[in-house]
Length: 97
Image 1 (spheres, one colour):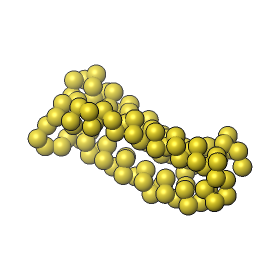
Image 2 (cartoon, rainbow, N blue to C red):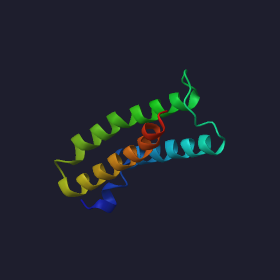
Image 3 (cartoon, one colour):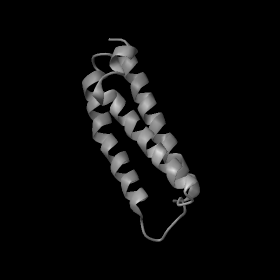
Image 4 (cartoon, rainbow, N blue to C red):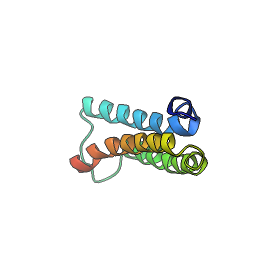
């Protein structure tokens, strides 16, 4: 199996879509000037936590299913998934949200 066919699997693209959705949510909050540290969590924080937490079992299932069958393409997809998750988490970390 090659990378192009593997990335079409739902367990491959769903974590990327969740990260993209969270990035859009963070951008929307930033543009609305709502991306500020608060003592209590708001709806953005809850949606962020749900979306990022939902990625973990999906990525785990992908790794269990595809790494033994296609190690190199699966490693590339896993690298993309992890990079997308880290890219979304970095503004939260650096802004202290």
